[in-house]
Image 1 (cartoon, one colour):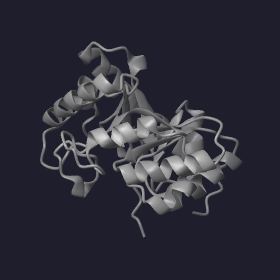
Image 2 (tube, rainbow, N blue to C red):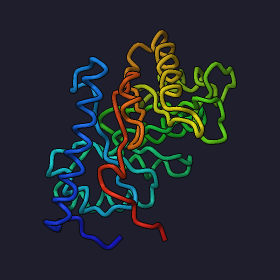
Image 3 (spheres, rainbow, N blue to C red):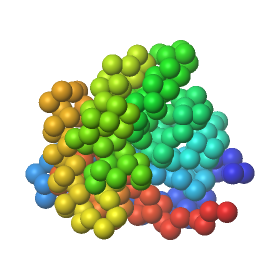
Image 4 (cartoon, rainbow, N blue to C red):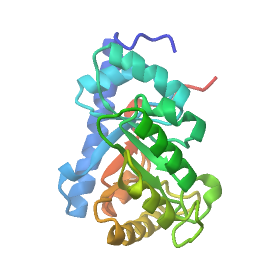
Length: 249
């Protein structure tokens, strides 16, 4: 990525402003339909494949939370954005390999994709040794359809590494981490309403043992309304906000 992150073309800023206005209107309408306060839902701008200058522009438009899913891209982008004097709240939302946790900790405020006890342990060790002045917020990624092959801890499983209970317990007990809640993606082939209704039940069950785990990151450009209807506190929006993604090389 060669973009300095500092220069934002006026035409691109206008595009982003229009996309942001549309997304914010959808979120507002979805909250109204669900009888929820608009302040309960945070939009995360998922900026993977987009330049640092887009993050700078979005911050200037009032966006506070930014998501990335590939460490190599995110680390460089976060550095560029910081050099431009912009400090969004960075969410790592992609599958995380244990050998990348130290790098991710350098910029991430939240990791949304912890789905095993082994990963939680690696993240906790790195967070503790990094000298962070506050715990790292962690969302446990849950597999709504119990297919761990696509990522996500498995509900109602006693598996000591990937069962949702063991993963949540390990995050909650770890030094350097704070269990903030759950993250999920609607499974392929599932209607969003079915998927997020199932997720709401899983989240309610988790809060019996972990009442502080109130965050629920669910819903993307195509299904954010259904997610908000079922209690999402964070929606992760990419293409509806930023336009069609550039082709990855």
